[in-house]
Image (cartoon, rainbow, N blue to C red; front, side, top):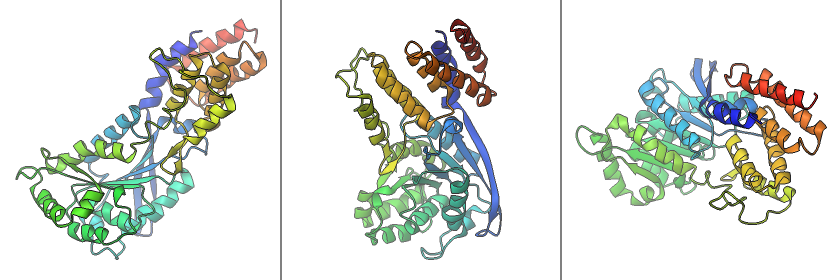
Length: 383
């Protein structure tokens, strides 16, 4: 059957690299005006059920393309290499960066803080069904703001990445060190080189505080970009710090269906029900439930399928359509798995895949070839 080959040629690049950007504009009481946020969603967003709740990454300084574009590229590549989960990336532009991010003290609420943790959060809950995994990333002024926001909402954020902060850094560091209720391991700080043409003033203050408050700096994640200038720091540091935030993500299913160098299972699996339960039990990021992504479903299923455990493979793909009911490829795989066992069931899977291709994949270039192959399969089976 040619369908599997066609999927290999077309669907991988389409699903991995495709990104959808929503423009979210609403009235902000905090700013007393309309504000706009740009939401970058993974391609598979259109396939998922409500049970798939995506993490949110708040990316500040959205008005600076030189900052945002490289960070977005880092995020996409880390997702492609499966170092971090797919997420909704909320790019937040500022109209007056220094004023919006400038810290007066840690008790005074800044409008930007209320905008993100209250107003934008409500808009995301209303329209995008996000998970409770939240990461905020800032640079320089917005890095200090990110630390300030985490200080005031330590239970809201999963992690904060502050690239080369300076504004009120001593206040922030001493306040964090004096507050034993805030989890310091959620904090990541990067800094540039000490040379005059690198990140001198920020690094000088950082070095002073690191010597003055060693307990704090030993309790957080740091990235010292000794050869990088101030504006280059977030570009070289964010990929490492984000990978550290999600360091256990890549390995969450490695204990399931282990294979040898010939891609064969090294031990006899349990019942299909038990194997599926193993997948569900491992579907977490920290304490939060996060179901397997498309590539993870395909990867787990392929290990069973390559060792001829077709009943388990079938149940893994059925789990896949529970989470991604609009993803045609899972139905095509189920068609292949059931066509010699149950003609009616396999026909339902094939026709469902055809329907989804026509309805969901309206502008995908690989659709036509697969639909033609589906039609050939229907003719061959007398359907």
